[in-house]
Image (cartoon, rainbow, N blue to C red; front, side):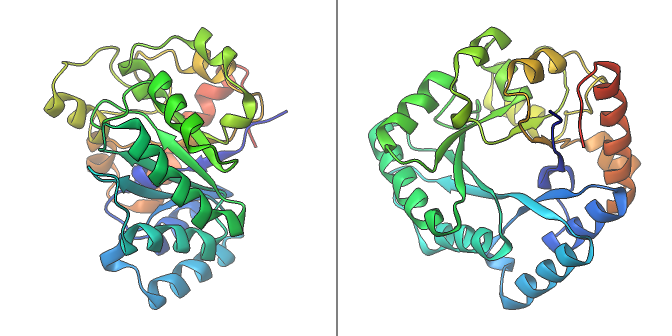
Length: 267
């Protein structure tokens, strides 16, 4: 079976969802994700985004990002992101957490799942070094405590590497926990400071094959048909391709070449 290839919102972080949808469609993607910024999201933005999605016959893989704050208290802005995902027909919503207590994070995750349930939207918890959830084990413990069928785990190849995980660990995970994954390449190592991890995540990613991460090994260890979201959040690509459609096309072409080289089928 072939993987779905999707354009992640993070590849075009300076553009609003409508522009991202047009860029994804122009570049040949059939799937895309969107960052929903509550202060910029209104009825007009929803209409424009839905029209762009329809114009290019796109499917919405995910919306992001619900950031659970310290204390675990959710707000209307968090629900707005969930509601935007429901309106757009998104398959997933991406969640991260600043709350170190697993129980409080699990309670918030359960509430998000209840909000997402009417659209059969999965609520995918991502672990990364700039949040309070920094490993697969921590994320899985929270998902278990949340005890909701919509709760899921998100693997990002960069954060997977930074957390010190190996591809063999993925083979032990239940496929139902992994609705999609984020894919990029990058430097093999990173300084262990918040500033370094942040720069690594938002500026230093590259397309598969352009860095030193074991991207193909990670993908092969995941479920065979898992959608791949290209999260190429890269200052180099932003500088080289200021046009959204041109950047999306460059990312798609480079990633397709790498996946073909490694006999990883996509459509």
